[in-house]
Length: 495
View 1 (cartoon, one colour):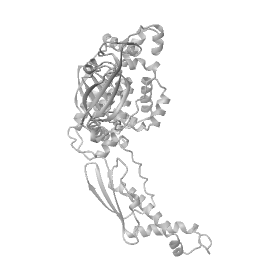
View 2 (cartoon, helix red, strand yellow):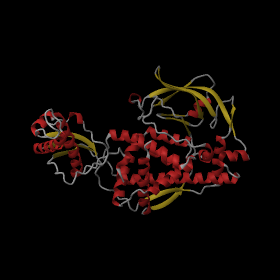
View 3 (cartoon, helix red, strand yellow):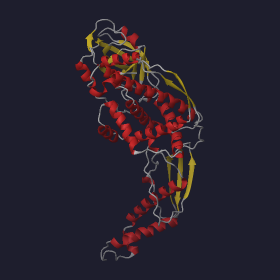
View 4 (spheres, one colour):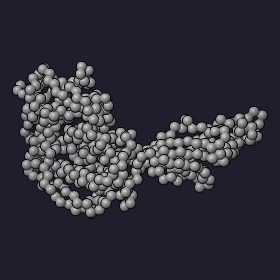
């Protein structure tokens, strides 16, 4: 498995076969599990050798007054173009030295080296020295991964499951009817939200549509007891509640701090479910009859059950693999990769047929603890990467076609458009790691022993609003929107 799950690093070009290796003096200090500080010294004899080569390359084209091109004396050319030759020598030495250090020290970088080229100079005498910091793959003892004992959630999709999912499909096509009484769970409200730190307004969201549920999920906070709060609401009269900002919110000063949410109800509506007419069946996806719609919903539920199974199996595999992974990861690496972790989760959810609301809930939950979950995911990645390398697991073009077709089938878009979108957003490396990690997990589970345990589809007790109390979020992954015609059953089969 490549290092593309983390910041990609251009592969160094090998030194030409005829190039004499530099006589480098290299010192590598282990700062932490994944961080190295490297000091490099290039001896004077190598500097002079490169100077002679640069001057030789310049001689044929050097033009000086009073001399034909290529006929000027070497000493005069060297003096006239001293600055250009010096810059050329420095660049070549630096490039060749970095390549040679990478090859000889086997650093296995996972990010670009932190190297300030501007401060590196070519001295008139003595060696040329420079240093840089670099993040590398961690070194660790491989855990036992064969013969794991795993509990796998399982169930048969029942007619009652399909009935409930069908009701959710119809909810998406229901008619909103004004409601004068107290909003109840399942009702839809339109409300304006303000978030205050004392008297200072942090952010606001005007006339947001919210489905009344026990909990309201925001990008950087949660509102427990939301249904009870809404039950007291009357149009035009603000209600307040104290909520706690997530420990990983974008604004560090507000992390873990209690703030005030002020909610003003604009209106409340109830949903009237429509009848399953031939016209509605066509709108939902050109279904011939109710039986065909129910079968499509059943397949969606089977896909979601498979996701829950994969999630639980992976959670147990990850716990087993990372149980002894007590090594630390650089905070900067975790911050950079937290965005990738969100994007990976969205791709997997979309592939498994979850609707946009469900994805938004999952993403908001993940955002609340993204650094901790990213640390565990990265440790798991490095271990899976080692297993993949040891077992010669690789990606193939057909794997991408399969994954893209699966995403397209759930989103209602063409595979070509899905591929273009992934490429444009730079997510093909995320997909690649998803493919190889999936293959590696398949290998691990082939040798595992499974015990099936009862599974109940989780019923959403949370509605998610794409708004941050702080006014900004850490990373902003794009949640692809499913098209209406083909994706209606998937959007309705909410879990």
